[in-house]
Length: 454
Image (cartoon, rainbow, N blue to C red):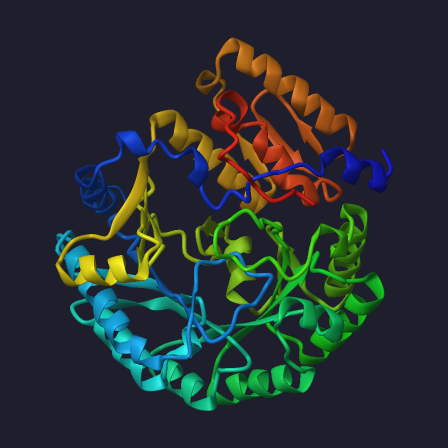
């Protein structure tokens, strides 16, 4: 089947599978804080050497970017910094009580929002506070998301002194027409300067995040973005697919409409060109939207089959316990998921009262756990295997019909209990993962709305 026909056939709403089950299908009725706390202890027993990954959500931004679907609070009032940091540290103190031994930090990521909305001094206060009463693994990866417009050399130096060695800069697209539409104006020289500063300070992994499918984006315009990106030669590249989800409250996707977006075919042409150019420049494709040079830890994780995917995206650390701190942050003990309240004021109040600011969660069943691993393998390695006992006879029959369809289109090869996705099939990994999703297949609901696969 021609590439255009494949895109038209498979361009349907599909989860990104940063978790399984996906958030819209969480069984919140069966969740309890008690189950969550017990699962933290259980994770330490099941994975005693795994350590803990920390994600801290810093929601504040000074302006609204109209492509962003992340949870954020727009303000110019920097007086919000200290109360928020105190709340995060209070929340972490609650969690530390659940550890039988001193928590060993294997990963720390600051995301947002805009982490560099916070002053270097307040970020230092935050990180030093998080590390109190913990140990840091010698191979820990500390990273943060840097807005090129607000990341100063002082930010870079302060965080580097605290152990940070990776920074990810949000570039999106250099086309000025696209930048105007998404309200994210930043010149290539600005990105080049902050990239050079990060390397001068001592960061060993500098990542640039690009987005495909933005309003008014064209193949010609993005070709120039690719060229400008490769001139700076970041160690790692993300090539995210723009998720057009304007129905989500507060995401700001209102400055344009669907008629301004590239079609699925145009979007895939842009992605295919970028993929070809990146690989020609020495980058290795990793997962469904990342590329890395062979000296980057993400490539090493792929080579060692330690690549992991969670709510932070692709990571080098396969720790089973992820503690998300901050408003809207999601945590994962492998057996239980939780999400914090999305209301900043409620979050601060509860955390300072010594109450976990949980909004909802999901306790994974045994079948959930098996399918979770199956889909995780697909998303990280483009191959997986399974035990047929987890599926009923009718489910197996349906599964093999769907696998035959993908195989006939040249997207994968399979046998009774395993499959491997072809190079042509990699852009459709979300579609392939969907056939194993019991919730999506058996309990569809209008509340579960996802961006398109392409």
